[in-house]
Length: 138
Image 1: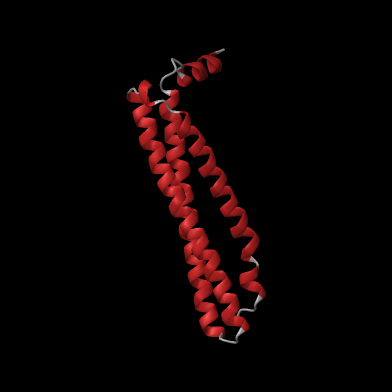
Image 2: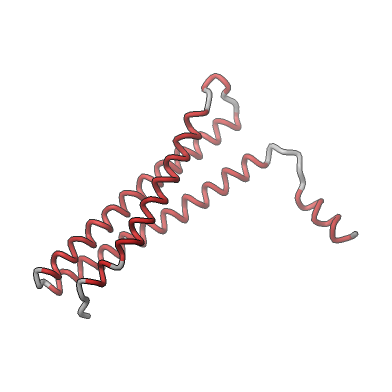
């Protein structure tokens, strides 16, 4: 398959926005972590800290994979520009694989984030199922 110089260039805005979203996630988590007081440690905060640690690690890997994808995309464009079409195509394919890995990690991080919210909501004395069933019977 022959790709032109514009094919890898189309990924630039997407990868840039993705990296910005990852950075925003990281900054938000960093500010949450900084609000924890080690003197007020209990079982809930210990579980939340473990969860946040996993998420920070995943975000770092997401960012790394995104940056590698971006780098390979530029390398692909350079190879195509220098008329190494086949090499450029393979490098572009590697860029797409890195991007897919980054997106996979993003889904894992979102899952962990949802689990953390569930853990936090468990400490409230609210039973969702009971409220839903009482609305249906009304």
